[in-house]
Image (cartoon, rainbow, N blue to C red; front, side, top):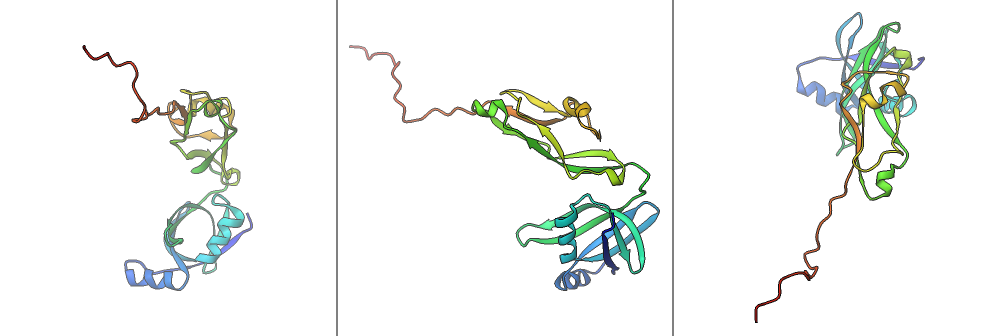
Length: 199
């Protein structure tokens, strides 16, 4: 709540400006949302990395925009994984008393029974959208999958009443499933039930 990140306004519409910002260790960004017009800004990349490492993606921060402070969260960001460089960051200005919709990581707990029996675990959904107040945003949502058997799945509807957060999404959306392993025949295996050759 007390984390302050100093940013500066930036020009828009010029690729050369963006290239210069990144070369000088800044990440192009924008802040928008509650009681604020979208403002193009630039954030120091090292300071942003420290923020994510120390506070996490969903922490409330105070953006200091050349003297003006705005309460915000990191709404989303783009990263070049090959160069390990941030490309762009979206900050969302928030009203601390109002609910917002935000995505948080889904973390699975336990080893499913079905996996112990040879099944394969699939997690088609890795982020879950929650409706929460800004100061109640969790870093993650943990889901216990230890009782999941082969051929069984967990949906949003299965866990909606088991978590203390309001989940946004259809009850039928699959979160995780344990499927039957694919069996492949060894082409070198001798087939013994072929009919005998005629004499």
